[in-house]
Figure 1 (tube, rainbow over the protein chains, first blue to last red):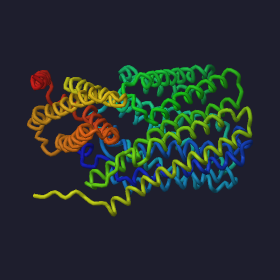
Figure 2 (figure 1 turned 90 degrees about the horizontal axis):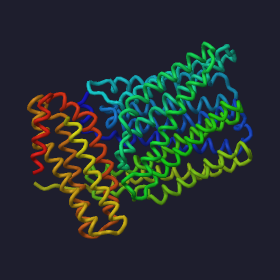
Figure 3 (figure 1 turned 180 degrees about the horizontal axis):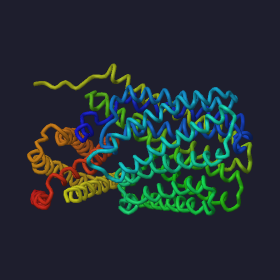
Figure 4 (figure 1 turned 90 degrees about the vertical axis):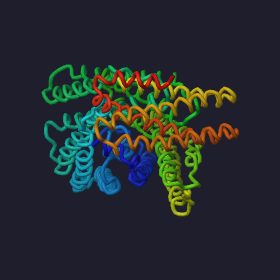
Length: 423
Length: 144
């Protein structure tokens, strides 16, 4: 396993990663259209359009970006690269994209059969991804990041199983007494077990090393995953057995996430590397959005006001998206540079000429305006249309950024001149 | 033991690079050049410690000649080429080029460091056992 981990395949083929990243803004554009034309429906909790919007955000954008990033980071963080990356990424990407489209269409157009199609495609994509990735995370050498990644992938698997159970209920229109509990367990596993766990354990490595900050404490790295797993498991048991004080476990989870937010913000603020970089802005924005999400969630628990819970969910998605966009802004130019440079092309541009920092910063401010209008839309619902318009421009530019990087790569790899070594 | 010693050295090199980058961003050119030269020397010394002592001992003990250590040597070559390009950019006052190359260099270096810290050093620690202390001593002496 170790030999494979440090083989010549330092980075997967560029297509294996970029196909996920380029799909993200496409789903962003679809979501933005929905926000422009159906703001009231999206802001109505449990409305089919609202469920479509939530799944576009969490599946089409957040999970799509995270799976793409895992294809890139697995060999570095996980110790061994994903085997046959081109073929496997094609299978997973196709199934995942079709599954997400089927689910969104099933909710929007009320076509029950599409829930079955969703279960087949999304279920296959996630089970296939988990069965490839999980064995790679169990080697002789182990560390906290690997353990965190294991929990995240396992949680994604459980999220998919619960999703399939719910999809079968929607398809047959017969909802069991446990439907609400399954739904809560489904999104708790997705938000905490999958998204939060992966972001935190990647942050523990990436923030310290890329921005040259003081390290996160060993206690954090070692114990957060354990506490989260225990709190999440007990919350689900409490839910299904209707025991009182379930909120206690929510508070444990919220406390850990607040700790992560404060610690990360502090580390980034006091980072040694001060060179202006849009990815740091995305991290800061992400931490701010996480704080708002946790605050509104606590508000929803105290006041029992459903729109606050919806707002918390949307803000949580924006937090994850902000971190992912920041990382994509680094990964994409790096991959283009790395592959061209490793192939010996003389025309290999520096990273800042592949996606200029100026364009990344414009994307950042547009993302901030999208997030801002989304956040205040529960008070003024028509502003969600404005958020949608801002989202259209944000994801349009993001799509353009990725496409031009991809085109540049292909142009140089086809027409570029390679260094010739004599002797 | 090896992990802690080498990880601390990685961080010391990162700090030197960051200081050089910050000095250049603040247009403190002479200071940036001085700090970069220190970083250049420290990083090359780190690679040399690995290639001349750590990796060779690991290879002798395990018989693993063409495996992870070989891959790390290959990455050292790529990183050394980047170090030279940045030095050239700095010496010829091409500061935008320095920052441009530095961005990809830093990602490549950190990915390399992560692989070493998470996989290779723990393996070397396991292989050397109590001889790890002697190895750290040898590495320290190489600095003198």
